[in-house]
Length: 395
Image 1 (cartoon, rainbow, N blue to C red):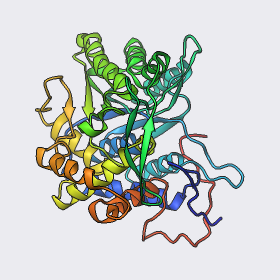
Image 2: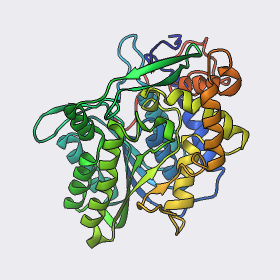
Image 3: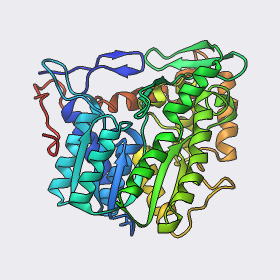
Image 4: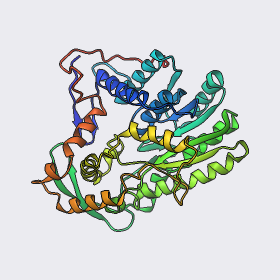
C-alpha cells in the first residue's frame, strides 16, 4: 500500500510504518551518541507511544540500559486503514530494543482502567520484580473513571472572560484571530478529572500496594507553564487548573512513598510539537516563533533531547535543580529572559505577509507530519509498504 498523509485539522488520519520506524531510530541514535546515564534499570512508562512518553522510554532504555514496560492505547492496522502512529512507534521501539538485547514489553489498553493496572502489575511481578522509575505521560482528552464509570471530557478553555488572540493555521500559513468562550464549572471539573493527578495517584497506590516499587523509586509526571501570552488559554485556563492539581498530587504521592524512600516530581517541559500540543489554540503561533528564535541561539530541543537531558542532567545528576515549587524545570532555555523578550516582540508583528520570515511555521508543519512518519528525506514514500506491523510483545 502506498501511504500519503491525510489530515483533518490537528489530526493526521494516516501514518507511515517505515517513517515512524525511522523517527524512532533517529531518537535512539541520538541517545546512543550521548554519555551513559547511571540511572533507572527497570522502568514503567504510562503513555509510552508518542511525544514525551515515547522519548522518555527511549532515553531510559538506550541511555540507562533500562528494561521498560510501556502502556498505550493505540490502534493496529485494519483493512485499508493504517495503524496509528503510536502503534508503529511502539513496534519500532520493541524491534530496536530486541536488536540491542534490551528488555521491552508493551500493553495496549485503557490506562485509566483497573484492569490495565492489574495486568501491568502482573507483568512487572513476572518479568521485572519491581520498578525503580515510573513515568506518567498520558495525554488523553477523555477518561472513564474506573470506580464510578463516569465519563469525563476535557476542554481547552479560559476560566473567566472569553479569550481573544491570534494563532497560525500551520497548514496554510494564515494568521487568524480566534475567540474561545470561557469554561463553566463542570467543564473545569471534568478537565481536572482527565488531566489532573487523580489517575497518577491511583497508579502509584496500586503499584505500592502490590509491592512492585523498588526502594527509592522515583515517579515523574509532565506539565507545562509557558509564557504570559498563552496563560489565559493554558496555565490560567482549564488545562492549567488540571496541571495545578497534577503538581499538588506530586506532594501527596511523595508522602505516601516516604516509607520506601520514594519521591514524585513534576517536570515542566519545553513547548514542542506533539499530537497533544497541536490541539491547543494559540500554541502553534507561539511555537513557530519560539522555534526560530531558539534555533538561532542553538538552544532548540525536541522531545528526545529534552528527555535525555532531564534524566542525565536532573533526575540522576545528584542535583535536580528544583524550583521554589519543587518542580524540575526543563523549560529553562525556553523561558530565558532574552528568548521570551524576542518572542513577545515578534508576536505583536505577526501577520499573513511576514509569518514565514519572522517564524519557523514551516518547521512546525514539518515536525507535525514527522509525528506520523511523513517528511523524512531518507524514506521513499512512493514505495508500496505493508501496513500490517505487529508490536512483538502484544499477541
